Image 1 (cartoon, rainbow, N blue to C red):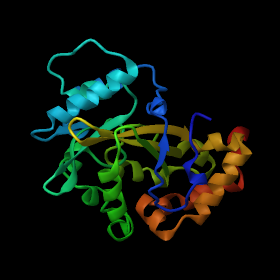
Image 2: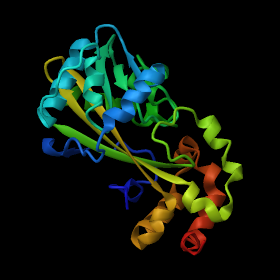
Image 3: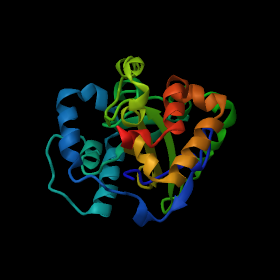
Image 4: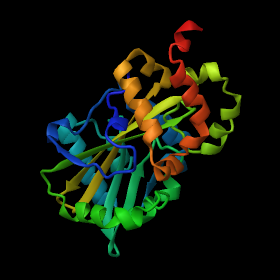
Length: 274
């Protein structure tokens, strides 16, 4: 499979799910030239994929230094914000979180693979505001997430993974409306090819000099049909799909795809027969 991770095997609900990983495993790579993909969006749709707040440049510069320490130095490019200079070297989206006015807030981000949101919509928001659409986040998770940010050590790298399903194979998917409008046109026999499993691998680490935190998001995509070639992966996905909590299903809008997914799961080999 082209998916490196199977987070549906870990939880059928929204979960923090952070675990420590070695610093050497921080960046996964897997894309030959992320700069070409990101530069095109930076030039043509900058307000969707890039945003920064005043005073965030020191933290951005530290994030760039962290990426260069991991990948080696690169030729400086004049005029680019430091966080974007870092982001164009990796497949991941990069988000700078800093403590402002008593809250951890998003002060700069390069978002070239955002799922149904844009940089201009989220810049400046607090952790609680960013996760507002997650049912019960404030009551169930906000205090814990705040403690995680406060307690991050410079030598600690944390990782979590999540998943969803859409009918778009594009990494850059800022607007759900045109994507969801196409669902009705998907023929049941085409579900395996038309639906895409979208997996996010996220990391969090401290920026010790500026005391901010760098959040990375690496998106992996694969057609749902790929699961048909690995029975264990297919069975795990089926269990997670059917066991997903109402809150998780509502947040991810899985209900939009129920008929198509169940049809695929009933006859996953149909893709190969067509």
